[in-house]
Image 1 (cartoon, rainbow, N blue to C red):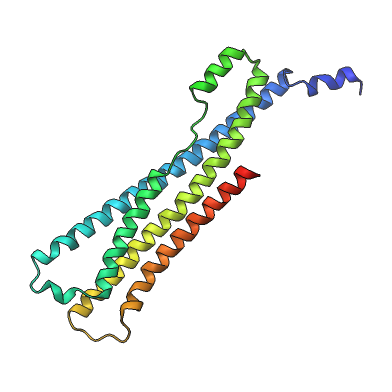
Image 2 (image 1 turned 180 degrees about the vertical axis):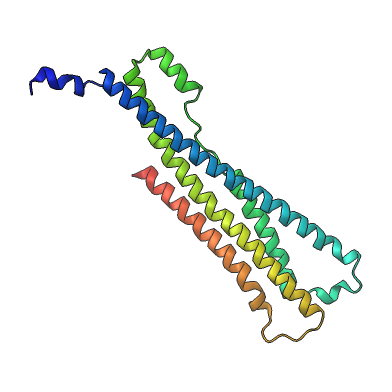
Length: 211
């Protein structure tokens, strides 16, 4: 094969290569849109979890006004159950408030294209390079938020279990296992997992910045 035959395939401005770049750009856009859809779904679930937990917490706070001798239900299980509800709300709010996806080219990118007057192939290459970064960062956000959503929902379920157990104890029904350490262990475990995961993510970000 001669040099003249090879040159068209090596030149990105060659029509067939521009078509390939456009196809790749469309595929990258589809992937990013799918990731953003997943992120929106995670945020919606986190919002619903926060709302449900807030309603439950509101009912519990107002319960003493309609219950005779509410102090009989105050025990380590109900206390840590309420603490778990607060933790669930905090994790849920942190989940959807930390979302900052890259939606595509912004105004500065468009101005950059207009100012520099890129050819089609040059701009497509720049876009594809940007999409690689956007897709990678959005995937990391999805993983981060997905973990905290799971922790928020786990905290809610655990809290409801502790509250039910605490109410049972308040009704003076015998328990085989109970105590402060037993009541606090589930919530403290979820809290510890949240902190450890947050520190892990922060450490990874710092490492990427220095590498």
